[in-house]
Image (cartoon, rainbow, N blue to C red; front, side, top):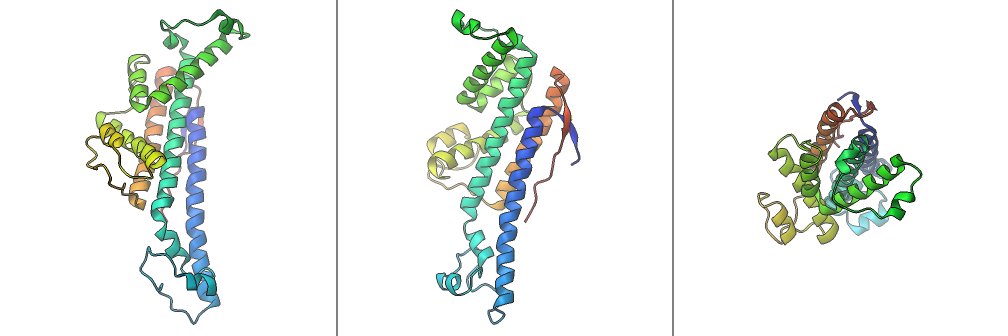
Length: 254
């Protein structure tokens, strides 16, 4: 997908997306190169790994033949690696949601109106109305983020008259990914009662480990990226936000 016109929020999201994508490709390639070099330096060893794919390389090989079985070793830690990358991708997405919401609220400060009372010293502590609006925006965004994706989604719909997701299916899919991130962060990737409550149609049961395969991770990361592009295109049009060239790279497959 080529460059698109997007917000600053989308631009910074795509930059981080590319950094994560490039790093994943690097560590996969590094393992492949280590294996190749080991085979070149020790041609007497069989080409096929001595253990099933996805199993850790034997300690004897690690000591005697540095780099032997590196790709196999990399794959054996797939669950941990995919947890890291899925979590980082979800974090990047949540930062985008925070950033785009801030851009919208600064552009439409009337959306900040509420019955909440602001102490006079807080008002006087800002040099201009724009500084005060920025401060209130940051506080509002943080409160919404702490409330979770459903709260953010409701705020966009009710106060900004903007549907964060294109349809209910997309909403559920994104919420499942964000819920998976929380399970990874707080329960080592094992489904808990909160995950089941948040995603009742996920099909997972309490105590089950999330199926963090490469396909699951890459599809989830790709869905988050497509969601960012969709939200950004519609937000730019509705709120007339400032735009710039945004790179939308594809997720690289190993």
